[in-house]
Length: 309
Length: 284
Image 1 (cartoon, helix red, strand yellow):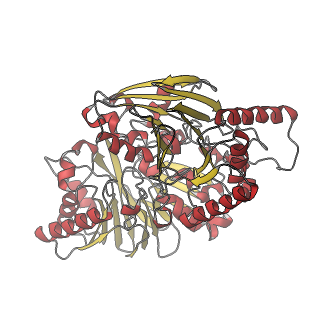
Image 2 (cartoon, rainbow over the protein chains, first blue to last red):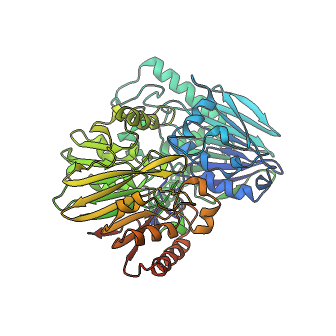
Image 3 (tube, rainbow over the protein chains, first blue to last red):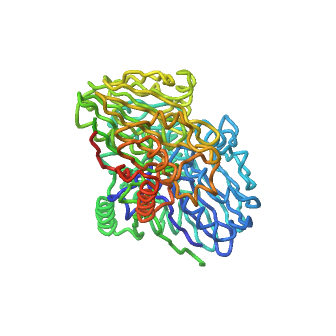
């Protein structure tokens, strides 16, 4: 399979000189099993460019088929959907998967499309769209690919996905806070508790369960894509934002015995030079520790071949 | 007054090496009256960068206020709001004047953007600054930070967008983004009267005419429309704005050169043409 990064940024798209090497588009990753339709993870602004590429590849004639797995529906993970050209062509089949919630999934996406926010309603899209609500821990198949999921530690809850096909596995773990300090769910956390206070036992147990779920999901993966929006110092200031840092990602990668760890969901104001420095520093950390996995950092246009190409 | 461009792009932010010179952030313009104060027009992604710049001053200390004029509520004009740092500093105060004629409906629309399915902020109520939403009256001047503002509604696809005429001591700046006048009838005389004699007319110039022709229903202007309006209204300077997300810097260069020719051909050789570029400043 091939994995290609179309958007690697967190929170908000950031055009400009200081972000143009890693890229300023929000989260979107394309997983392409050999000879099969694309499985797209997240629909940030990177999806617009992917859509244009797909239009040259069957989708322009209305013969395209794609699945989109949504980690969660925060803006930076869905804001590219109205600009996904294949939706505007009759005949294309687009299946959207996201976590089940109180409101119907299609109603959630309908809110994003149509007036007063966008000129075209979801119901006017020409492609055939279907929506699949997932439970936390859902397992299903997309053609030959096996998809599994687990819950992450993020406000309003996000899902991680593992896609296994062509004798390789890729795991997408974004967005999540570390599983150490704070259990995030439906409540708005205005100010986080002191990180040095001990956790209530039931919270600690729940977090340990979530972490074990992530380690199991990522076990032996060829590629683990992980939310590292923060540095450790930044995380200490904003643990309630629901994002992690490279030290935590490395600990998960180590426990899950992955082959490659990819830093992802870069902070909007993180410059290309800062990202270079973070990567260099953590490559040093894993070399020093004698870890057997490689650390890379996601940039727009990065393409990786895994397993049988 | 001093005008600064924080976001000049239309529809969706367009990051990439090919948009660096004009900028890829969506609509946001700041206007600074001579007497100080701050008026912000539209809340696209450029607003985040304006907000971060403001934190260094009194907005960081929670002792300032500003007025925000909102043309309409499409994503590219509101998506920067949740990332505007000064609304998270208690003591700051913001008044938003927007479209729709009802402050309740407008506040509800802005609240929808913060819905917990979409935003970790969950609700506008989590802003710590004062955030007051008002419906802009049409055609009746109102005061904002010492400036006199008049709003006018223009067609924009299936909906409308507000244009703003801003005056200070006999100088005027008109902001007219997202304007889709009907192809058959051209600009409405009321719109031309609204732009009349402006020192600066910032006008929607999303498209080349050939691209506009296939996307008429989206409700945007071409550089031809912008040039025609500027000449008809006898303005002094024309600012092109809201470039299509797919246009590279080289394509915008070309759009601007074509707009210059369109002005000259229509008898507007005396009109100064200034393309909006992120980070540029203009003094009136």
